[in-house]
Amino acid sequence: MRAIIMAGGRGERLKPYTTVIPKPLMPIGDIAILEFVILKLKKAGFDRVTITLGYLGNLIEAYVGNGSRFGIPIDFIYEEKPLSTIGPLAFIEDLNETFIVMNGDILTDIDFNKLIEFHKKKRAKATIATNKRFSKIDFGVLNFNGDRLITSFIEKPEYNYDVSMGIYVFEPEVLEYVKKGIPYGLDSLVLDMIQNRDRIYSFEFDGYWLDIGRPDDYEKAIEMFMKIGKDSIQ
Image (cartoon, rainbow, N blue to C red; front, top):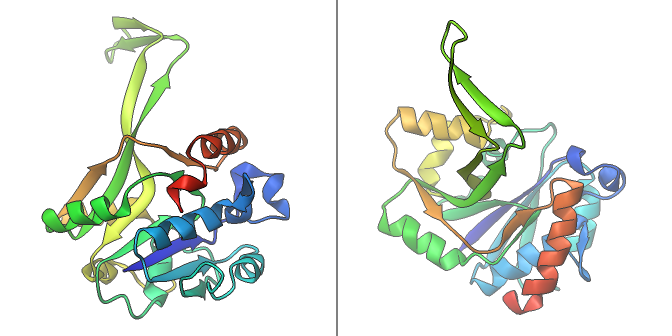
């Protein structure tokens, strides 16, 4: 199985940490979060990893090497300019079978094999792993009509959403949407696939999941790692 790890972002929301350290190399416990991702993929049975690089990519390549110390072959693709979530796939020429794409800053105990099994069972062209997130509004929310006549009032409502986890399963046919050198995000891909009536599914996951996109998320990720620890990757 083949996995593509997206690690080319600048980590703007995590500054000042990411001024000198690329986000995937931020430590959780005694390892970098990217190392956690790689080892979890290896445990799931993946036999090759490709990492897309951009900002401070030389540091990531130096840290990871060819993958021998992790026991899995690793190669790299460099983005000359930011290409968003899906754009870098156009430069990977040998994606001929089902493959996974994921962000390089995710802490999760998802079962990749169950995700792929679901994808195959649905005969999907793309499957997005999703997780429920809750958002509380700390104010009273008003609804009104076009004449500004108030029609309802909700005190401090709570909403829940199914959000993308940054983990996707794709068939090679997805690459038909991607143009070389043109930025192309997951949002554009999903909308294009919906318009073309392609089979794209959501895989609901209710276990541990967190990225380290913001300082408070990073702190939570460290706490989470203390709970799930290395047992999930050994």
